[in-house]
Length: 499
Image (cartoon, rainbow, N blue to C red):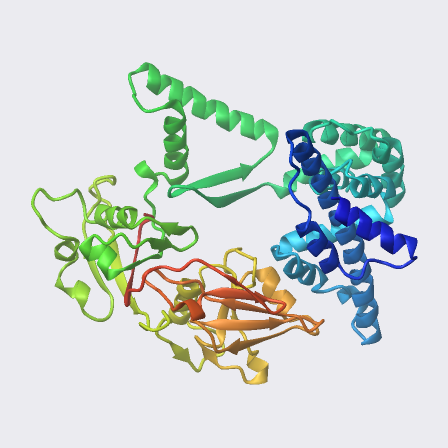
């Protein structure tokens, strides 16, 4: 740390700033690890203080950039209600964060710089880290600027009043101060929270998922109590499943109305023919979830055709001879986990990838809107929103070159975006262009001229030469991503049931 401090001191002594952030980074890299245990701990603390100071500097820069962009937009004649459009997304790209996270970081900076100077000072001095400064800002969001400044003064975080406090203690202290300042606003915030109740789904490790419900506390407690009573009753009658598993099974069954949760939902399970038919270990990809083991994917498909056979019947034999032909084929058989009256089919939709680069076979259309087949194609190819660092679900099927600029409705000119990123792309100064690259590649240019490249993720069975790795190019630097071994054919089991 001495090298960094000396560099900063030298700049201050000569009344000039440090030449660049790069100089600080290079000076930091030259600092050796301490030779004793106490020195190592000191270095860890000093580096934590440095991270906090860097976060504070980022907050100041974000606010200054937002102001500059608004002034530029106003001078260009942008309507007042559209000023600042896309700024949060630009900050997100620069910080390698999702667009929603970029907007929150900009809001954090604006609150700290304009309304909460003492909390900002605590961040700059390392008495608060960025996350805990965020908690302070979040818990005062319902207050007016005047009341928020008063809470900032009351807490006086830069004097060490929150030193040693954990997340819960800081949240409690800020809430109490906010309530003393304006109890009506806090109560109004609590009542408004009811309107934000929602259900979300997030991937979890090992082919699991988090199904989360944000509900009023009384409803949450009642639902949990009902599941607990149900599990206790079954455990007392000899059910050997863990209590938590019983509660989870009961929740899914009650929501879907079907044992095992099998419902009429189409899924997209992408795998190679070798994985499905020959027991290859190549992973598969479940759209909306991510990578899953090949063995899990095979079991998911096999379950659709009923119990495992006693003999050596293969998946191909179960599907039927049509499985290796062109077009869609299907085979119907009730699953062991569903009532015998449940009739559904599992279809194998074949898509082929080019052996050199793993590009999916193109599908073109002269229509203004992407037809259903082409939308499914883009959904499979892109998996999630194509904006770098954004992994939100695809909500819009976007013309990269806009339709009103003669952009065709083709797979090459199409990309999957979340709603927020699609709106950001239409802001003044933003452009997107399909460019040559491994698989499907799009170059996104921001109003400042910075470019970011996004390449469609590798499908199962795709392998590329080292020089053509899947990458996201940011400010001229390329960050490689993971690759999978090469296969040529991709099969997408989909059907009238969730797997």
